[in-house]
Length: 413
Ligand code: HEC
Ligand code: HEC
Ligand code: HEC
Ligand code: HEC
Ligand code: HEC
Ligand code: HEC
Ligand code: HEC
Ligand code: HEC
Image (tube, rainbow, N blue to C red; front, side, top):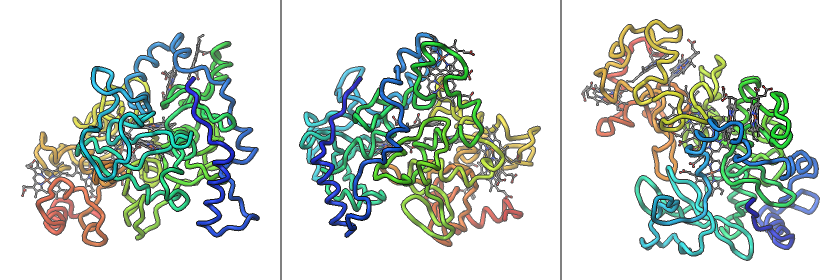
């Protein structure tokens, strides 16, 4: 067990006071950052969690595979250099944004797109205000300005890891004791607390997402992969939610509004940032037809980028269900017939046109769109949303791309 520092009561009162000042709210309104007694009661106690090692005694294959996934590398102690290094950021590079040194870091978050850092201020774990872009290898400020909670946490020293982050980066966060069962996204995050099952293994005392309805199964992923707001707390994650439950009772996922651009969505409803896979996928035709996250992603044994079931850069993943001889389109008999690019060209890769990188992450255009729509250059001309063609053909104008689209797919709506 890794204990997390408590936010002292005094600290909570100070935070509560800060809400009063910035919101102008009266004492009749809830200014307490703490979740309700009901939510607290709904959260399984720390003692109900046994940890991934225990599961591995009987499920070695799932454990071995999961160990190598990004879910197991989310929040780690700082180690620089050597085979087990967790720090990718270069602390010898000076930056006006970085108000901390490596020695101040208690936890390193992330490794694929960006790294953020947790340290202690006045005895509580907080998020430092600078991040490292893995792609551009540079320090950037981390302002959190587009997060709904920003107005209450303009001072980074009030950005509690526990309240704002760790619910999605660790397993079995106990809101009473403010401790987590394990760091990272581990077995019991998706299967529920497993003490009873481990003592007396049965199929009905553990959650198997494959036996849940599509909606309840997807809710597990959406509890972290869907931007939104809690229903009745000031926490930035769904306190009280457990696998198998209905997420909407704890969490209101943001929905795109046609024609409106905000932090999460472009005006056409495509992903404007990372971590909105759930929000945008719910708008997709595939979701309407009952497809869910786990039809494409494998949580235990995938060796592919982003834990896909099959390789997606070779089109193998999409061609499981699509292509000639399958029922779900496209109608053309050959790859080039559909894509109008040479077969081995990047321009014939399904995900490049149907999941372009429209979302910003550490840097712009890093996160793939999950509506799976082909995004027309007409959308760019209309309201600036990135499209499926110019993300690749950056040296050409949207009008150039639109002319080709109208020629190649004359029937396109
Ligand atoms: C002592 C051995 C043992 C341990 C420890 C154990 N399991 Fe199991 N698990 C089993 C057995 C046996 C089954 C098959 C039960 C059956 O079908 O009746 C099973 C089944 C499952 C299933 C599938 C249920 C279904 O619907 O068929 C899941 C998911 C699962 N375990 C997850 C876990 C997780 C997560 C942990 C750790 C928290 C864990 N198990 C710990 C032995 C164990
Ligand atoms: C991020 C979510 C997630 C994590 C983490 C996770 N699983 Fe699973 N697990 C699933 C899903 C989803 C399924 C159902 C897969 C399907 O659709 O067939 C599943 C299925 C299973 C099953 C049933 C047999 C099978 O392979 O389909 C077992 C057993 C299991 N998981 C054990 C584990 C153990 C042990 C760990 C930790 C080492 C773990 N899981 C971590 C999501 C997860
Ligand atoms: C509601 C759940 C949730 C909350 C709250 C949350 N995150 Fe995350 N975070 C995620 C998910 C899911 C991802 C995976 C990236 C994606 O889906 O686009 C992620 C990704 C990241 C990454 C990039 C990881 C990588 O490998 O590049 C960092 C860094 C990060 N989060 C830091 C934070 C910090 C700091 C906070 C608190 C201020 C926070 N997150 C709050 C769910 C959450
Ligand atoms: C408790 C929160 C949580 C849950 C539940 C969860 N994820 Fe994640 N997921 C994350 C975080 C955080 C990351 C970023 C990990 C990192 O970058 O180290 C992530 C990363 C991923 C990635 C990118 C992995 C990579 O190799 O870059 C995929 C794909 C993914 N999750 C799919 C799923 C699916 C599908 C489910 C449901 C079966 C699920 N996740 C459930 C938090 C969660
Ligand atoms: C598990 C099966 C499955 C996989 C894998 C799959 N799809 Fe689909 N897809 C479907 C189904 C089912 C539909 C619903 C339409 C239909 O049945 O005609 C669909 C529809 C679509 C549509 C049509 C949307 C519209 O507006 O009509 C697109 C585009 C699409 N998928 C792209 C992809 C891409 C890209 C991939 C790979 C990343 C992929 N699909 C992987 C099953 C799948
Ligand atoms: C160069 C861009 C591009 C690539 C690459 C591409 N598509 Fe498409 N796709 C489109 C366009 C444009 C449409 C819309 C056509 C229309 O509405 O007439 C479309 C439509 C679809 C549809 C909806 C059914 C239909 O025929 O209209 C499916 C399914 C689909 N694509 C699957 C795929 C799969 C699977 C791959 C990879 C093998 C792929 N696409 C690669 C541009 C592309
Ligand atoms: C039709 C297939 C399909 C479905 C359904 C799907 N994904 Fe993905 N997902 C992909 C592919 C393909 C990638 C990108 C792989 C690559 O970059 O090579 C991806 C990437 C990701 C990533 C990495 C972030 C990024 O921007 O690349 C996350 C996280 C993720 N998916 C989560 C989810 C979640 C959560 C769901 C359900 C709400 C979901 N996906 C549904 C195919 C799918
Ligand atoms: C991931 C990269 C990628 C995407 C996405 C892409 N292309 Fe291409 N495109 C290429 C490459 C590489 C070539 C070179 C020859 C070939 O593959 O046919 C090319 C060639 C072309 C050509 C002919 C050569 C030229 O430059 O005049 C046109 C026209 C074109 N693409 C238009 C489009 C349109 C329209 C879209 C969106 C529907 C699109 N491309 C999407 C990579 C891409």
